[in-house]
Length: 131
Image (cartoon, rainbow, N blue to C red):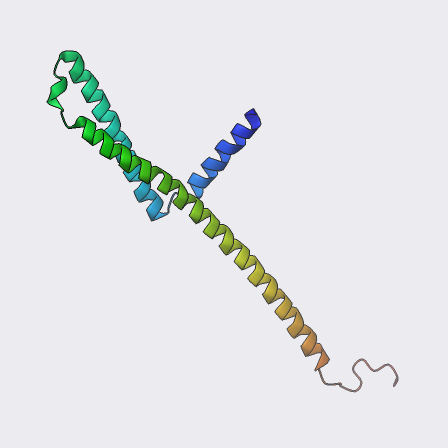
């Protein structure tokens, strides 16, 4: 069980590392971070002001928390979906490059065979019958 958790964590870390420079992942990460920060700030302010007896100072904090939660619930999964998409695109590009290189190898091999078959015969060069 521990091994599976460690492998999952390393997979998520690799996914984050691979997609760290993708601009959409950066944007979605920032939006999710801001939304989570807003939620945490509103909760802390509401509880702190509630302890002092000024809980009514932030009447719209519940609405702000709901909006920030909705933004976070959209941005966070969207960020992971984008990260997975980037990784799939990268793997597809690697596969395409590998297939293309194999095609080029076959093409060059075929060209080399065709050039040896079409080479003209030169007497005295490679002819063992006359000495």
